[in-house]
Amino acid sequence: MISNTFLGKSRYYLATEYPSKIRLAIQDLSYEDVWRRANEQSNSIGNLVVHLAGNVREWIVSGIGGEGNHRDRASEFAMRDGPQIPELLALLGAAVHEADRVMFSLDENDLERQCTIQGRETNVLAAIYHVVEHFSMHTGQIILLAKIYAPGGTRFYDDANGKAVPLWGGNEGMRSR
Image (cartoon, rainbow, N blue to C red; front, side, top):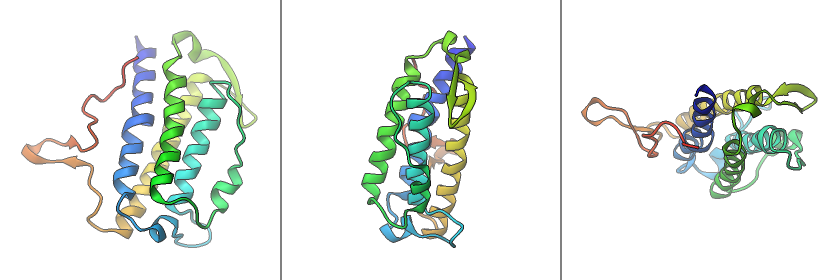
């Protein structure tokens, strides 16, 4: 069923692949690198990780799952320093774990359910789709910054024998319901 495929792939990307790539990209960076900004209009890796956690909670955990939301989006970008890398990864991990729990509870009938998130009328399918693409975009930004700050330090695949085997154990490509 296409709804199960959509939910399974969305859960996989949000709870496994993207957070794993972020972890691999930033785990060996310095605190200074994680909170460095290229200029005043740019965000640091730290800002982006905090922002992703806030976005996932607001859109999926609260907007779809109905749990309370106390997000201060502006403060996610205003931070000039913040948690150390392990705490940033734990913050993100907790958010995607909560979102995964909500998405696991959904079925085909839920996908068309209307909801209002950030004052926008949408439905569950569109909200999940938004979060996956948003998470993907910021994951790419984080990876680019990590590659700039630590050239040669970011690697996601074992290319032995001509096969790109994920280093995060993501061979299944989809989380089951």
